Image (cartoon, rainbow, N blue to C red; front, side, top):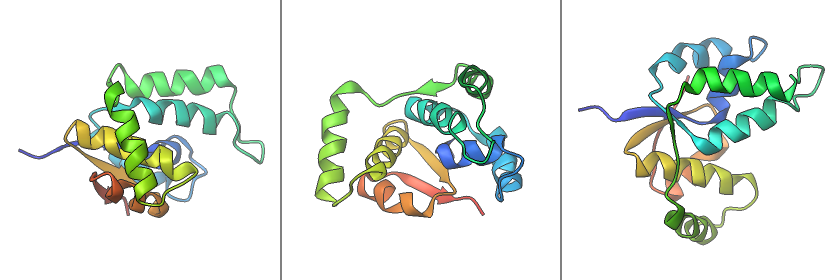
Length: 137
């Protein structure tokens, strides 16, 4: 049986943003996503509401977009795993935004999902927590 598919924030932002260079590729994979990590929802709302160049959307609109996309299909990392993931991130020498990538990767791993991403920088974090991931081309 194939692993469930989830994605990170890079795929969601690109898929929701017609101006994004990788919009078509992200938009094509969004229907295959079975669930989204809770952290991805929060990060997506944050990013959408602060996009530069006049592309930011009101927070309430960003929440509506994410709500429709997630459609109740949200998973999260078990509370007792957070410190383990943060420790693994530290042991791997990760810092800053890579810590959030580690949390997303660990959520995918905990729920036996393959994580789709457009973010090449996140690969190191995903590998550090043992997440199965694929880059969207």
